[in-house]
Image 1 (tube, rainbow, N blue to C red):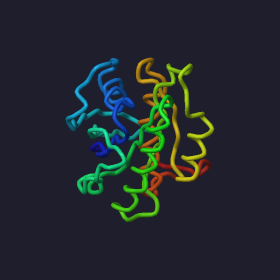
Image 2 (image 1 turned 180 degrees about the vertical axis):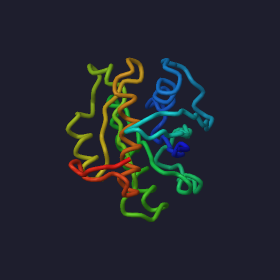
Image 3 (image 1 turned 90 degrees about the vertical axis):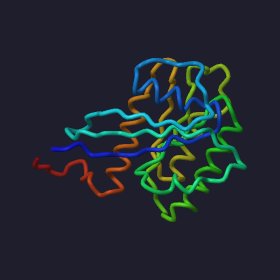
Image 4 (image 1 turned 60 degrees about the vertical axis):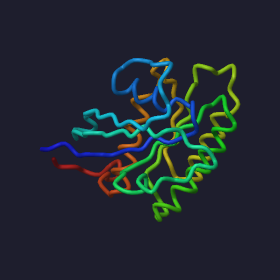
Length: 182
């Protein structure tokens, strides 16, 4: 069976670790310094629940409250990973602005989204509690993951979560106790 293609946009304020999360996932290494001004696309094949996916991850240049939501991010994307840093209240505010702009652009009530609080390795500098992140994700009906790109904590979980959100929104995930014949 051919692999399912899924195109996912990584969005968030600058320096929250979008590129680091992608590079950790795709290449298995932590890159501290990365040119954040360019948009880049990474591809990785992964298997999840016996389905093979070709995942295209679009690493967007960081957004801020003034950046206009580029029209191309509302087309041809299956899901969105919205990243903030747990050490930055500003990045948490920005992710909410991005979410509102995203819904306006896409014109759907529900979009497959994973909200990600990155940089859990910097727990001493934490400004956004896990509870705050969870509450926001619940409000959005989105999945929520806290990660550390540096320590490779929950990085794979984050990408599995967005694939599951996409499948769920496409109606491909049955109820937990449903019988599946493949």
